[in-house]
Picture 1 (cartoon, rainbow, N blue to C red):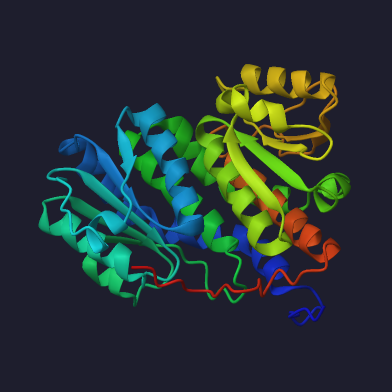
Picture 2: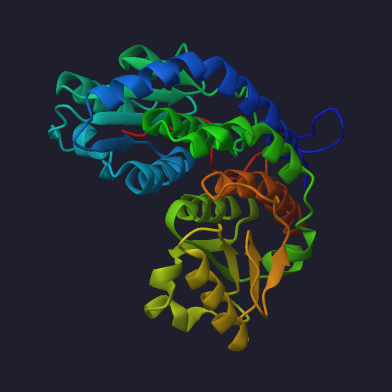
Length: 348
C-alpha cells in the first residue's frame, strides 16, 4: 500500500484533521460579525421552519444542525434532497424559511439548483462553504466561510469539524443563549484538548470487525453518521449509523462479536438511555466502545472534561478521525485515496 504522505511522514488525512482547532479559531473570529447580524435578523423575523441542503459529510453536519435548531430554538428543520429539484424538477415551498446549504466545495450541480430554487422561492439562503469563490457562495444571500484552508485528502475532516462549529456559532447568536455563546468561545481550546486524546484502545475492535454499528442520539447522531461514512470510505468497513432508540428494535438482532458497536454520547437528556443501551449490549456479549460517556462493560474512550454537551460531538469528531485513519492503515487501505472516490462529487 502506497500512502500519500504529508511532509512529516503522516497521511494527509491525519495532518488535516489535526489542523481543525486552528481552523475553528479562525472561523469563530472571522464570522463573529456576520453571525451576530444574522442572528439578530432571524430573531426579528423568525422563520417558520428551516431547510438544509447538503451531500456526504456536509449532510451529516446538517443532521447536527437539525437537532440543534429543533432542541435549542424550537425550529422544525428538514433535510431536502437536492434531487427533488435537480432530477424531479419540483419546487418545494420555502417562503420565509431559512435555507442552510452546507458544502466544502460549493460546486455540486444538484445543490446549486436547490439553493437557487430556495432563494427564488423566498427563503433566506445561507451557505456554509469552504470555497468562498464557489458558485454556491455566489448564489446565497449570506455566506459563512468555513476558513478551513485547503483540504487535499479525499476524506473530509477539518471541513466537517468547521461546519459543525459554524452551525453552533450560528445557533448561539440566533438564540442569544449565553451558554451556547460560552461553548463557542471555548471550542478551539476544547478541540485542542480532544486532539491530544488517545483512542487507540478501540483500534482492534474496529480493525478486525466484519461489520460495525455506530450509535448516537440527538445532537450526537450526525457524528454517528459521519463516523460510519468515514469508516466505509477510508477503512472499507461496512459501518452503519443507527440511532440508539432505533437499535433497540430490529437492528439489535445483528449486534454481536462480528458486529460490535462504537457509540458516541453527550451529557444531556440522551445520556441515560445511551448508558443503559451500552450496559445491555455489554451484558449480551456485544463488544462496545463508548466515547463521551461511561457504562459498565463498555470500553471507555477518553473525552474532554467539562465540555458543553452541545459542543461535545464536535470534540468527539476531533478525537475520532485519528482512529479512523489508523483503522484504514490497519486494514491495508490508503485513507487519502479511497478507491473510486474523488474530492468533489458533482451529483445531479
